Structures are given as structure tokens and as C-alpha cells.
Length: 133
Image (cartoon, rainbow, N blue to C red; front, side, top):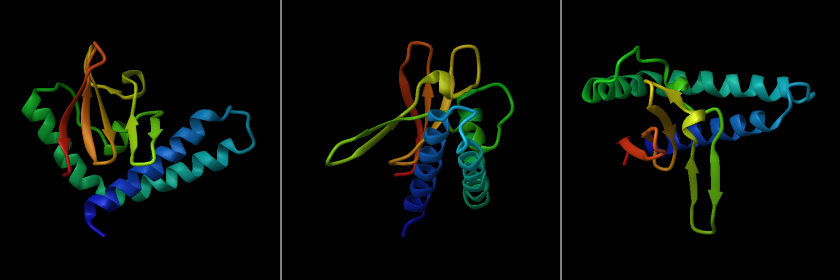
């Protein structure tokens, strides 16, 4: 299996857990279990892909003159994702409010299929800044 497929698989596993957690009320008896599983998956993600993704994100900050500190790649995952499944494909998107705000108007988000980092601007536009194709 190619590294891109491994990254996609890891991103999708995190997204599934994040979406499960977002759909649960904090008082739900499953909340802690789902949250703990999410942290385990995120820790494994950072261990396997963190250094490489952090380097890519640092390059994007330099290239696009983003201000601020480059954070752990986990920070660039949205709080919740929209998942649209069709018989031929699955598409993932995130609202800018759920993505990491990097300045007054822009947000960055890490998405799968293919693994990519998108800029979400104030007008709601999504611009792909990097993709592992």
C-alpha cells in the first residue's frame, strides 16, 4: 500500500471519530470512549505522519506569508467534516468555522482523498494549497 493510501486511511479514521464525537452530547455515556479512541488515533497519526506534514505546513506558511506559529498537523483537522458518499466516490469538506483560523479571514484544513491542505477564505472559497497526488 502506498504511503498516500496510508495517509488517506489515517485521515478518514480520524474524521469518522471526530464526526461521531461531534454528534454526541457531552453527557452521553459513549462520549468518553469515543474521545479516548480519537486521541489514540490522533497520537498514531502524529507518530507516523507528523514530521512530514509539519514540514509541508511550514513550507506553506513561508510560501504564502502566513503569520503565526506552525502547529501540530492535528490542529489542521476540522472539528467536524461533511461527508458526501456516492456510488463512485466519497467527498470530504469542512466549514471554515470548524477549521483552524490562521488570520482574521482565513482558515486551513487538512482533507483526505487525496490528502490535501486547503485554505478556506472569508467568502467561503476553498483553495487547494497542497495535495499528495
